[in-house]
Image 1 (cartoon, rainbow, N blue to C red):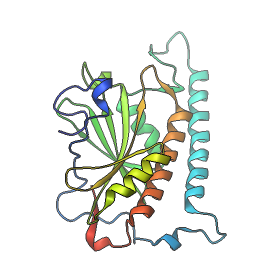
Image 2: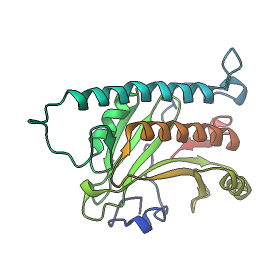
Image 3: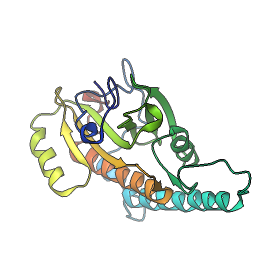
Length: 231
C-alpha cells in the first residue's frame, strides 16, 4: 500500500506507510534527462559543485516566485477577493494545484496520479533528478491532507546497503531506508497544517534535491546504468 493510498493516513501513521511505492514507468525506464554523469562530471568549470549551483538556482526561483505572490496579495481587492483559509503568500497540502503551479513556475515538469483515496501523487522531473511528492494524512478526503512527503527511490543491484543507510541517517535530515526488495529510498516529510511560507517550501525542496544528489553519488547511481533504474 503506497503512501496516502488504501486508507486515510493520520499524522501518526503518515511516516510509517513505506511498504510500497508506485513505479515511475512500466517496462524499461526512460532516460533521466540525458546521459548519466560520473562524480567528476558533476563539477562546473570554475570548480563549484553542481550542488551549490542548484542551491543558488532554487534560491533565485524562490525570490522570484515569492515576490510575485506578495505582489498578487497586495494588489487583490479586499472587497472581491475570494475567502482563503491561509494567506496567498502561504501554501498547505489541501490543494495540489497550488503546489503544481509553483513547480511549473520553477521549471519542473510534473505528472499527477491518484492514490486510492484520491490524494495527489506527483512525479517531478527537472531534467536531472526525478522524485515523487506524496500528499498524506488526508483523514477526511484529498482536500484535507496535512503532510507532504518528498521521495526518491532506486532499483539498484547493490548489497550491504544497511551500513550506507545507517551512516546517512546519523548525519542527515532526510531519511533513508531500504524496502522489502532491497531498494534504497530517501524521503523528507513536511507538516503542512496551517500552511508554510512559499519561501520555506521552495527552500526545503531545493535542500531535498541537494541531498538526493549527494545520496545518488553515495550509492553510485548512474555509474552502472545497466543495473539500476529509478522507482
